[in-house]
Length: 226
Image (tube, rainbow, N blue to C red; front, top):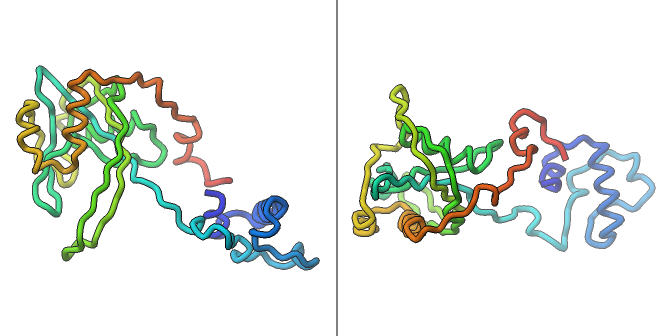
């Protein structure tokens, strides 16, 4: 994080110089900095932050974090039907975590946006990794995305009749476990079935397992700093 901001030039020059000097004292061989007497007086350059021993620092892989609501009532599960490049697909109410929100708040927001219902997460069903790959097909580019999903069970609240379903969502529907198993070829992700099976097995973890530091929710109001 610090490295990317220094490379982008968004960090004040005084802080950049202090960081360069600090890294130079730790890695005098691998960190590319000037060692002559003119370094302190010459303008700061982005090239000072080149790490020849670790080219991966330039671009680091990371999964795409998503949140999903596992909603069950009277033996039926609420899914959404949504448009995708592959056609209409079934999914849990789910979506990407937004900057500045906790996982629990993100799940409640996505459920509201995709179902028009209030949703209160009460337990964590599980944490999942899955990979999605799609060949290029005009107008869509090729994709290769690894998703890190946090799935929550909870209480479905009142319908918010004044809202519209999120873009791409066609409708919500209630399906039995057998119906969901029988429609696996229409699932947007294999995690739709996995999350349901884990829920049915009684897998639950307390929300206290997840901690969100206050610095996360301050991100949207504070300027970026080191």
